[in-house]
Length: 143
Image (tube, rainbow, N blue to C red; front, side, top):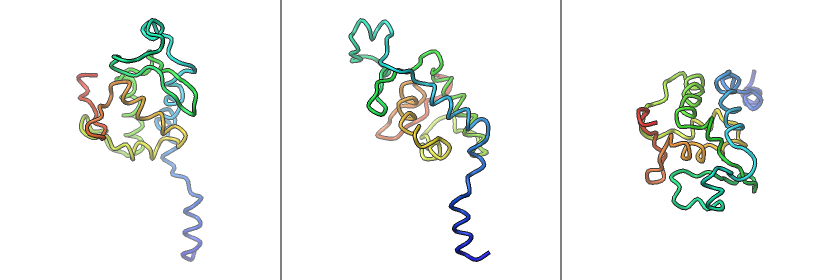
């Protein structure tokens, strides 16, 4: 096989790690983490959707459509558990317990159309905090 054939072959090869169950499950989790429409929790209803003063965001806009975080399935510990399984499966290494989150690595195993959901979910669940523009995993004991 010459160099041109090798390069063309590489273009069509799919990383087999993307089909591993924890990675597939994490992508499905990201798709189901948000429901259609703005949040209708008591706080959002009473405030008329004004989230000023909320510690974590409830309503988001993806593709110009409002969606709300499904609180029952997106606690920090839920998100962490799903992320840890996918991370381990994809990288063959444990997710660091704290410190900067390698978001570029997470994006490697997340479907491109779901990338826009990552940071909002990670922040809203309390899994990470934005420290000077960098996402830092919060110590697991606090989640």
